[in-house]
Amino acid sequence: MAPLPKRKHSKKRKGMRLLSRATDMPTLVVCANCKKMKLSHRICKHCGK
Image (cartoon, rainbow, N blue to C red; front, side, top):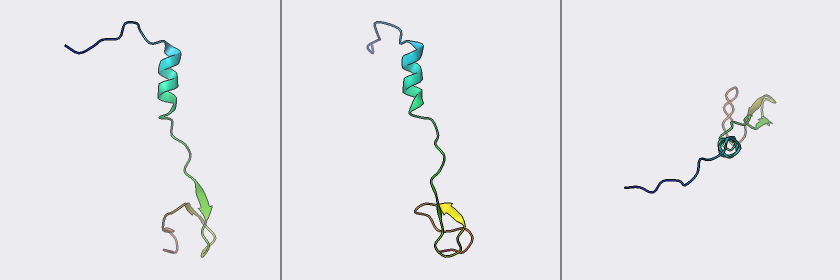
């Protein structure tokens, strides 16, 4: 049989755990070739560079 927790975790503790899963806005940078916004470390969708 698996071990069980002795006490219930609080709502605050649950929220703190789930906080790390929150999605952030992706980091956008200006493309050096066409000057449009693109994801960093990705190929530009507009010019392909």
